[in-house]
Image (cartoon, rainbow over all chains, first blue to last red):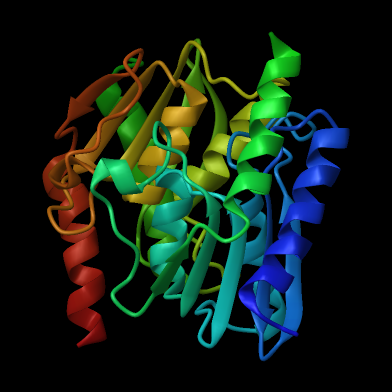
Length: 143
Length: 143
C-alpha cells in the first residue's frame, strides 16, 4: 500500500492546494519510515518570497521534526523536478531518496548537469502525466 | 564613501558574528539606494536547517522589506561565493548586482557552470583576503 505512487498522490494533493491558491502547482511531502513528517506546496506569491518553493519548506519542516539537519532515511516526493535552488538544498540535506513526478526540462536541475548527493537515490516519472497536466493547466489559464 | 568595499565590510561583520556563534563564517547584506535593507549570516547549525545560509535569509528579508519578491535595484554583498542553492535563489530574485568576497572553488556556483540571472551584474574579489582568511581560520580551528 505504501508505495511511491501512494505518497506521490499525497504530494499531488499539495500541488492541487497550490493551484487553488493561484500558486504554481508544485507540491511535496517528506516521508520517514512510512510516516509523513512534512508537507508543503509552493507559496512564492502568497509570501512574496522566491525561496518559498515546496521543497525548501519541506526540508526545513522535516529537519525541524527530526531535530537534525540531515534527512537520513527520508524520502522526498515532489510533483515537479526540482530547480537549481532546491537541488542545492536537497544536496546539503543528504536526503536518502527523491521521487519526482514530472520533468522540468527548462528549469529543472537535470538539464543543468547538476546532481543530487551521492547518497541520494532518484526515481523519476511517478504519476508523471497527472503531475505534468496540473502545471500545464495552470499556465494555460494564465495566458 | 558608499563603495563596494564599504558594504563588504558590513557583510564581513556579519561573517564575524557567525564565527563567534561557531557557524561557518559567511555573512551578507542587501543594499538598496545606499541603504542596508537586510543583513544575515549563516545559521545552519543554530537552526538545524541546511537552507539557513546567509544569502537565503537575506533574500527573504529584503523581499519582505520591499513588499515584492523581485530584488530590483538591489545589491547583495556576500563574503563567500554562493553555493548552488543560493545561486538558484539569487537567480529567481532577479537581483541587480552581486558582489562576492572570496571564491569557493569546491562548493561555489561558478565551477558548476551555473550563472546568475542575465540582469545580474557580478563583481568578484572585494576584500577577498579578509573574507577568505576568516573561513580558513574557522576550519583550521575545527581540525
